[in-house]
Length: 193
Image (cartoon, rainbow, N blue to C red; front, top):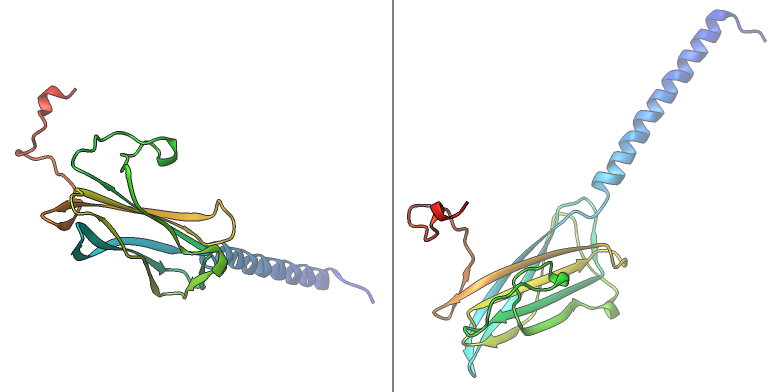
């Protein structure tokens, strides 16, 4: 069996086309593996109130986990913390563990909503899953902070975090709002350099 130059050329072109096709498929598979076949979740936090009892405001901090990916997302652990401020508290920056954010000195709750013993919970693709807990804060509290940390694998360095702060005015939670610089702004802009 002998190859002439024409059949060798056709064989080489066929091998080249096969390699290019395989490379395109491999690149597409790698893209899907890295981009689409991984956890893609969004955390949203809100706090619902039920009223007062025995000098405390009953609150339900809620973490909504929305799975925006194509695969089921496992929740191996979901930590939740609820902290609050009282009127007499002096505002100060926290330590390194909270990256210098304003410290809410009083703890109402620190818990694992999804605990290690359960192994995991999950959120199907395209679904929003609600995780919550009920606790209480003193009636005189002026602000509340909810913080969550979601571990979507068993690795301790593979997590998402979110937090949300609310003001408490006249016994009702008020979402924090952006302050736009305008004519009524109390800051003397001429003094700032």
